[in-house]
Length: 339
Image (tube, rainbow, N blue to C red):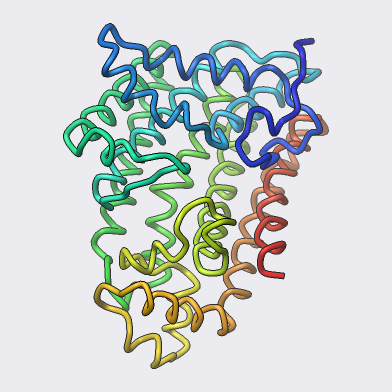
């Protein structure tokens, strides 16, 4: 068995995506593979493409690929290299999307460091993001046609989800259905794909592959809903980034949509156009004081329950318990802040 390290050494902020006291060296292998994947003959491109990798991150998507692969193993021994590479391919898609998102949002920071666009400019950020997507596709192609097709389809779903969100920017009539379809594409599909690739690379039966895919999808939905709740209720320090960002950008998430649907005229009168920082603070307060934080948390809980149910047919294993623990941890994190 490989040497184990405390999970918080690998995952920034100690978020136990696999609910274990220690983590196999698989996630250390992920870090090494990520850095190797973006090395270019041009040192400048390597520096730009590596920027957010070196800044750290939870590595949730490759962790799910590792966890899904490990459900097929008798112990938590190292998973096959194909599972590591599959997880890396999905993480590179995620990182490439962040490079592009920061250009669209004109963001100046990401993961507590200067954003790529702020440091090197929009053109470099766009091209480096494209480079990451290309490297992800190259890795997926090396894993076979099914994985390559799956990753390509996932990139398409991510773009569809992002476009759907952009269509509803500053739209105070955005519906829950539009919101849920958007987050399924831009967030949940990546967790579903990571889990599916982990299962595929270990040759699991189709029933298990589908179950792990459903787990990843349901987890991803809960993950994004929780993230959106935290944007309303958490502080800048707790988030590690500016709170209220969605309201500033005109992205109205589930708690906001439900507060508006409940007929809150004060909030409705504020939204539909850009907010000042003071107006954003008032809007956050209105949503926090309403009842829709609790109802949104219940929706996240429903998705967590779906994720847990998807794992039941897999049988007992340390990896399966770890994946289930990751879903539970989502609720623990938001409850701790909500009080």
